[in-house]
Length: 279
Image (cartoon, rainbow, N blue to C red; front, side):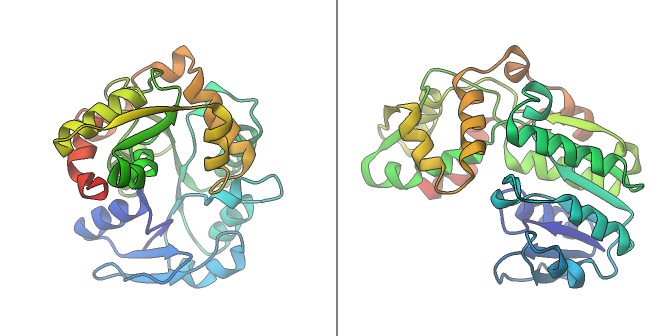
C-alpha cells in the first residue's frame, strides 16, 4: 500500500492516478472528502495533526509526503509525520522538498525544509527527495482574471524560470515510490526552458485564440495575494526567487530525463491540457 498525501492537488492527483494505473494499491489522503481512487481508498486527515494519519498509514509500506502550507509555518513540526510513518511500519518515504533548499539555504522556510530532509535521511527508512522549482500550475492563479478580463497580472514580468509541469513531478515521484533504483537520490526538477510571466501570457493567448494582456504587479501587490494561501515567510521566499533568480535557479536540470528517460513537458504542453480553466 502506498499513501499519497495532498492527493487531490496538482501533484497528488496525477500521482495517485499513475500509481493506480501501474497496479499499485493506494491510499489517497486529503483534508476534505474526495472520491477514492479505483481499487484504492480515500482517508480524510490533516497533516497538521499527525495523530489523524493513523488510519491512513495502516498497512502502508511507502509514503509520498507533501506538506500543506500551514506545515511550512515556524510552529509546525512535520518531522512528527516521518516518525509516525516509521512507527507504523512504512519502509519508504518520498519527500516533496524545494529547489530553494539548495539555492537559498538560509531562508526561513528553506531551513525548516532542509531540517525535514535531514530527518528523512536519518529515519532509517528508504528515501528519495524531490526538489522542484516553480510550478507551471501556478498559472492557475490567473485563471479568473483571464476568463473575466483577458488579463494576466504578475510581478517581474520579464524575469523567467524553468518552471515544471506538476505531472512530471508526479511521474518522478511514482518512479521513486516503486523503483529501487531511485532510492537515496535527491532530484532537482525543472522544466525544459526558461519562460517569463509575460511569455506565459503569450502562450495562453495562443491557446485561447484571443489576446491576453499582461499587467505588471508590484512585489507588495503580489505578496498580498499570495499571503492569502501561504505563510508570509514562504511568500517572501518565493518572491525573492521569481524576482531575482540565481544562476542555479535558471539552470535546466537533467533529472527528469535521468529518472523518466524523456525531456520534461513544456509550459505549452501544460497549457494545452489545462486550457479549459482559462476559457
